[in-house]
Length: 140
Image 1 (cartoon, rainbow, N blue to C red):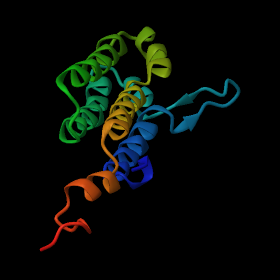
Image 2 (cartoon, helix red, strand yellow):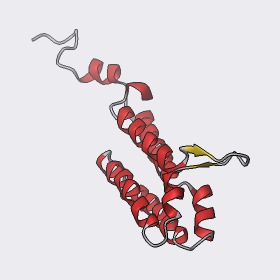
Image 3 (cartoon, one colour):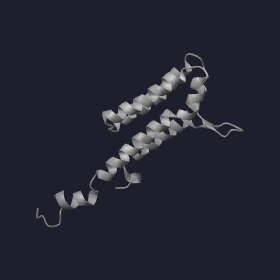
Image 4 (cartoon, rainbow, N blue to C red):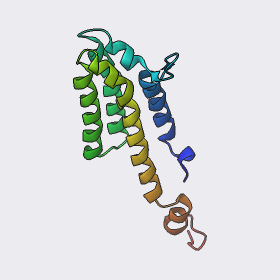
């Protein structure tokens, strides 16, 4: 089963679009660096970084729903926590947000996990041929 056929493909694509909006939606003129709503919200003192936490928490919730193991969820949570804590520091945090892109990091981690799960799963035709009651050599 390749990745395009896997049922999680649409879910991960949706999360990737959200991460893109939060981390890379806009290209800064002259410097060419990509920033997203996370960086823009981070400019709002006090509340901006907290508002940017909602989409990050949603990505974590969806990773849990898609079967991410506790160690992976902890790593993703650490990425989000680092973004929140350092992002809250005026100016330094804003610059850090531009480079850290925790939402994209987390979706990449989830994608890697799901790709490894897919690679380990037996091919459908192998399971069907050995275990199915519809096997041609079985009489019903």
